[in-house]
Structures are given as C-alpha cells and as structure tokens.
Image 1 (tube, rainbow, N blue to C red):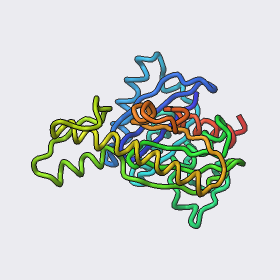
Image 2: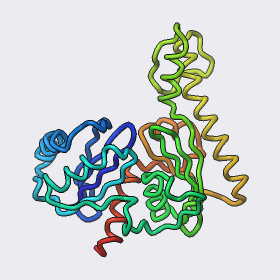
Image 3: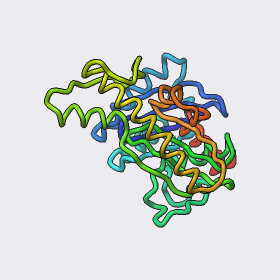
Image 4: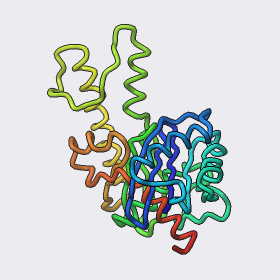
Length: 257
C-alpha cells in the first residue's frame, strides 16, 4: 500500500491507498518540531483502528511546503515503515507537467500536485482554488501546464488579524451568516468574513477568466471549500482529496505502477 503525506503550513494529512482506493485518512496540526517518533506513535495507533499495520505500507510519497519538517517525515517513512519515500521537488521526481513560471522552483509542491490532479480528473483549462493556509488560485492550461496563479490571505488568517488588531472585536467562527446585514458586532464580522470572501472568489475568477480569454472550469479543495462553494455558482466542483490523489498519480508515474 502507498502512504501519502501532504505537509502544509497548518496541517499534515496522511492517507493510505490500496491501488486507487483510499483506505484511510488522518490529519494532524503542522509542527516542524514534532519528531518522527511522535508521528509514528500517533499514526500507527490510528492505523490499528482501521486494521492496518506498518508492514502494510510498502511505498510512500511526500509533498511538503515546510522545509524544516522534511527530515522528520522522511525518517518516519524510513525508520518505521521501512520505505524510502519519493519527495516532491527532489531531482528525478517527474511531476508530469510543465511549469510556465519565471521561477518554477518557487511554486509550492502542493500547488503543482493539485494542478496535475485537477487536470487529470476535470480537464482544462481550469482554475484550482485551494482554501488552505493561504487561498490560492492556480491556473492550469488545456494541456495540463501550470501557467500561474494568485495568492490571497485565507479567511481564517484575515479573521484572526481582525481580532488581534481591534481591541473590542472577538474571534468569530467562519460560517454562512443568516443575513448579509449584521444587527450586532459578531453577525457583522461573520458577514464580512464570509461574504467578503465570496466576493473575493467571484471577483478573482471573473478577472482571471477575462484575462485568460476562454472558458475555464473552477475546482475547489481545502478546509473551507464546501462552505464557500454553497454560496457561489462559480465553484463547479469540490474535491477534498485532490492533493492526495495527485500524489498517487505522481507516484505511479515515477514507479511505473
């Protein structure tokens, strides 16, 4: 079985695939100080609940945007599962897509994996929106090439910045408010965060499509994808496992399996 690891700035997602079928998925908060031993204790206990053993893992692949975590995640695979993982971004790991950027090496591994998976599943051209630590809009051409993107602050970080900057404003949950016009502070904040981001999504998608000059599908992934997708018709599909499935595709292509 294949262990896929998607290490982002906020969360690390582990999933085990048996062929194309996902057997299980787990999420942990990102912490570059967490050791391979700590990951192993946590992960193997969760695997046991799904009737999975470390010996069931025969291969692994990692997409990581936190360089300080690379050593521990690699050690986890090698020491506790006995496999040498493929690492996105390492020489010799072919992603199977062209990166049409001024500095291709600066594009986050997760964004390239998303681009590949989205094109394979939905075709192109398209916009892949990832509601992660940042809200990213990635442009994928008709042939699958990564053609650029937009990076915006996430709704969570915008909400937290508002709370920290204004002494009398509380933390609020990101959710769809009953009304756009708030009748108190908290409803007003919820409306601004929620509907403000709907406006950001719709505005950026419209401008990207106009500049691109042809129809484009819009696919969303990430933690808040579903709650924003329900508010705007511009998001045509939500695919929460986009990155993990992209890792499977890349692993298969690089191991000829």
